[in-house]
Amino acid sequence: MNKLRQSPAPRPALMLASLLAGLLLVPWTVVRAEQIKDLYEMEVLGVAAAPGGDLAIGQAGQTAILLRSKEAKRELTLFVGPFEAQSIAVPLQQMKPLRPLTHDLTLSLLAAFRSHLGRVIISDFKDNTYYATLYIETDGKEMTVDSRPSDAIALALRAGAPIYASSKALDGASTNRPPR
Image (cartoon, rainbow, N blue to C red):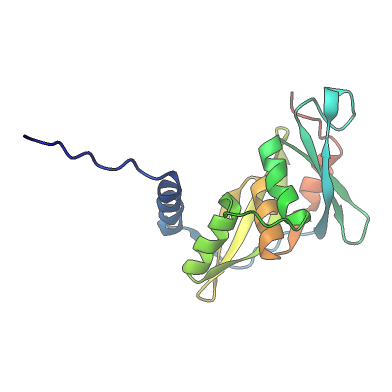
């Protein structure tokens, strides 16, 4: 009797690890420490839900991430979805998940490649969208990776890396409206 062997189903965690490892092998732009004028070191004040959509901070289902410069002169509010907000709230509340979440896995992969997150910069605001950059240090070199600000913040909080915002991004905050 012939028995067909079925290959085991791929594990989601293994697939994710393979994908992230592949990203680490992609040629990154090696840069010198980029000097952006008027950088402000930011602290994350908290995560605020917008129930019912009748608050000024956002619509129903959206969450605001509140940041303030350490000098307390500039503020920044980012509107994100519930999953992004949860990824930021976990380290803010010093919660330890039973299993690594995606951002924990990302930092573990960086460590496995003898790299670490040096800092993140929320660098720009264009077309109602914020842009951020991860600065990853490895072998005495600094590399940059484009990132969503919510992911950059979630990684920085876990890694203990500083979060900066450029004056250009902060100036955009004054005209920022919640996405519709």
